[in-house]
Each structure stands twice: as C-alpha cells, then as structure tokens.
Image (tube, rainbow, N blue to C red; front, side, top):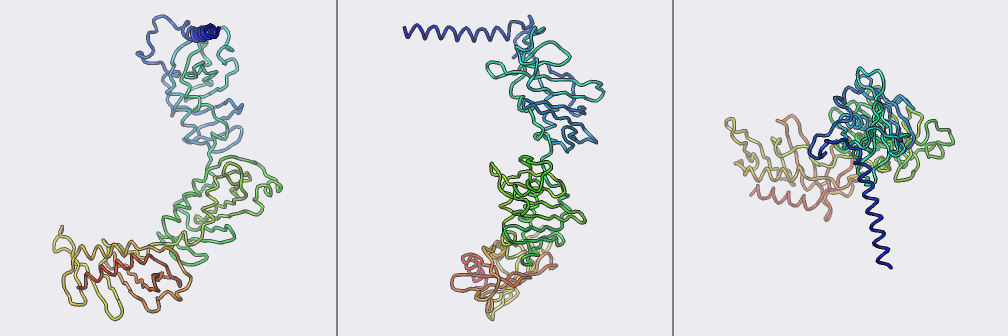
Length: 452
C-alpha cells in the first residue's frame, strides 16, 4: 500500500512538471528554434542608457518614485525632492538597455492574471530623449522554477520571460533611490575639524599640507589618520530616515537633545555640522545634519571613531626624514658626536656615497648607513606622556640631528632611557613619546658598527 502511494505521488508530481513545461512552451512561435543557439531579442531595442531622461519606479512594496535627469545628474522629484543615488539609478537605466527576452510564452494572453501582470508587482516607466509618452516595463510573478519573471511591455500584448535576477535591480523603494550621503562638503577645502564626544574636545587645523592637533594639545597630527576621519564623515551613509520633521520630543527620544557627539567641519567660509545621538537597532545610531531637519540612522562605527582621543590622531613617526632624502646626520652620545654626510655621485647615474665627517674622516659603508637611517625613520611612538619628568631626557642617551631634502629641512630628536623604557622628545610639544626599546637598542648597535 505504501509503495502504491509513493507511485501515485510521483505520477502527480511528474504531471505537474509536465503541465508547467507545456504552459510555458506551447504558445512559443513555430520555427523559433533553440533559444540557446539564437541571439535573444532585447526588450527595448536600440535604447541607450544615457538617453533616458525620466524614470518612474513602482516596486513591490507599493512605493512609487519619480526621477529626472537635470544637467547630467539624476534628481528625485517625487515623493520628495532630493538628489538621487547615481549608482542605483544608473543600474536601472543600464538594465533597461540590456534586458533580453528569454522566451515568449503567450502572444495574445486571454487573462493577464495568469502571469501576475494585470496588477504587476513591479513597473518601470521611462522616457528617453524624443519620447512623447512613457514606455513601460511590467514585471509579474516568477515562473514555478524561480528562474524567470513573466513580463510585458505596455505597447504589446505578448507575455515573455526575463531572467529573475533582474528583479533586484528594478524592485526599489524610494529610500533605495535617493542619495544616502548625509554631509555635503568639499573635502579638499576642509581646513578645520572640531569634535566633541564622550565629554572630550578634539580640534584639528590645516597647516599648509599637514594637519595639526590644536586641542587638547598642540602637536602634529598623523596626516593619514586625520584624512581618514574626514573620509568617514564624507562617506557617512544614511541607513534609514526615521523622522522628516522631528518634534522636540522626537529629538529627545533619539538622544539628539544632548548629543553623544558633535562634529563641526570648516571649509573656508563654509560650515557643516553633524550631531550623533543614541543607539538604534541593527548597530545604528541616530544622527542629524544640522542644515536639514530630518533625523536619520548611521552605522554605529562612526561614533566609535569620533570618541577616539588625541593620541589616536597624533603623528606616530618620530622622524620626518627618510634614508633616501637625508643629507647630513649627527649622533651625539655623551661627549662624542658622530657625523655622516651624503656625497653626491661624481657624474649622473653614479650612486651617492656616505662619508664619516667626524670623528676620523673616512668613507662610510653606504649600505650600513642607509640601514641605520631606515631603522631610525621606522621608529614610532607607542604612547605619549604629558611631561618629560622621569623619562631620562634631562640627560639624553642619544641626540639625533638630521638635515634632509637637500638641506632645506632639519630636525632634532633626543632619546632618554629609564630602566627598560625609552622615550623621545616631540618637536613643538612639552611631553614625550614612548618608543620600542628593542628598536632603539638595534639602532645603537648599528651606530657602533659604523664607528669601529
């Protein structure tokens, strides 16, 4: 009895599969041939993506969004006026131009309900240059296998199939299609940043091509780290919009009446301010661009970056010079001073040499000098102390004075040692940097090798 039931189930399933194959193929025109060996027709032949000027996207969520191209850029006009997401919008226009008909399933359908096209889940209306009326792409249900979607154009009766992966490109909500970058500013013009977060104040100012920390200490900033913060602010993308016109009660609810962080960006006379409030769902925080009323959510990692202290943004390299641009280096240990000078090659193409100028003038091993300078140039601060007290810097173990960039620049760094800890002076600051003792010991060994 059990075997009979299994056999009947198999027959029913096989019959269902056969019905589907018959359903999608029986009205295919004769002579159409094998679709795998014949080029497929485009849904919109001769359509160029850059000629599309208007879009109306109606997705399965019931939202309808209108976009227009203005001066070469896409703008959202309905249901709100906003800059459009160029990537999402271009994805739709490109898909419209490349969309192919996998197979025609019904040249003259009696009932579009059979395909989910009497009330399509997704509809894309568009106008290209020269079009008086909208052209439409209607997308209905998926086929039973899930590999294709039933589709039609507004100017034809026939129902055809398009590949189902295209659904993700066309099925967009309004939020998907709007530009999600929150703060608008010209990055290359930013010359000041002021951050208040976690009860601490931090400020940066542009100094020529470098960044300086001006609060809570005045020291050189690490260019890459500060620029990284600016990049994160510039690319901070909205995850959602939670209130278009928030009330004072809303601001309190989202923690924006007393923000966790406030950022002021200065770009010449232009200003931009971001405030970050409480935590939301899905690793998000509430935020607001103070030039707009709406409250949005951002990834919570931005707040973590804003809460970093000054030490995270300080320049960690002890030396600015590098082995390739140093021209003169002096090492002072107690009463002894050792001086190396770069000697240019006698003619073009000849390698530079190093000469020990003092003590006992003589040619120096170029590779060993370069290796010593590379070790020094790679030394970095692991932490900072506010005072030079108890650092050994009152009686330096080593002082390095370097000229570089053809003698146009110079710097002097002193090293102090207390037990197993090594400290270095910070140019322009009263404190000291703690550095790796092993790196310092290796540098001294290399120097000793050169003095022999």
